[in-house]
Length: 201
Image (cartoon, rainbow, N blue to C red; front, side, top):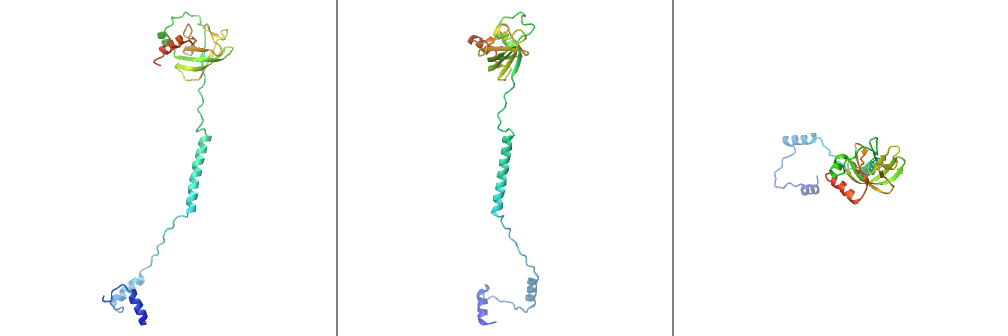
């Protein structure tokens, strides 16, 4: 070993020159060297981050899934407007149409009616009268009511002439329209009576 090489090694050796060293020929130095030579070298492999392209594809796949679910919801009727309720059908008249009448009062009106509404006649077709409901007082939520009149009483139910475009107050019990003043053309006074009778729902 040349002097120049010794000087380079000395400059690279972090050990201070004053520290005593053990010759390589001693038994302990040989044992230490043998341990070093027999120790297997473990190579650590660093995990590489996933390529950015895979991340982009993953985000795109999630976005596509969200769009597909949203489209399925729309096509399945998720934002579909609820359909209107079916028309309510009532029987307008019966065999006892000429039965004796009780005197009209708001208390009697409340007692004899499980259905009460104000509506406008939209059509009169033979024995069928169709009305659009303007106000419900009791017993329903349909937007349309159909009155089925018995044969021979077309457009004239219990003495009430139902005319297209006119507004009426109708009460009914058990699916049958009430007469004797408990159903008839709408007037401010008659409407006030209905409002009073059904004030509690």
